[in-house]
Length: 143
Image (cartoon, rainbow, N blue to C red; front, top):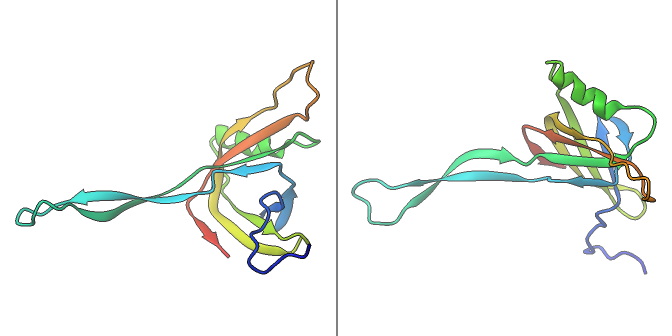
């Protein structure tokens, strides 16, 4: 059945780029969010209604998961932070349609890794070894 114009895009069809270069295929990308705190405020002569004023903006940390393959770029990037050198990178999460055409691009600004999780090893399992990298960032835009 052909896709209709108002049909939503599938969440499994995405790519991740950094620096304009395709970095890797990922099995999962979670935590993409943005929120603004509110400040309750009331002036003396006002009635009992509390006004809501905008406060600090916060961006949710984004977690990327992928199967372990040759090359340890996730761990190397995380290790640079442990060594005291924050390597900030802009990252794009690109949502594709069924023809693998770019439809929506989520851009993370000045991202850097805050947590790396290695694969779980279990001799009795029949699963791919998966590692994850959690990054914080200073803002998200949608293009």
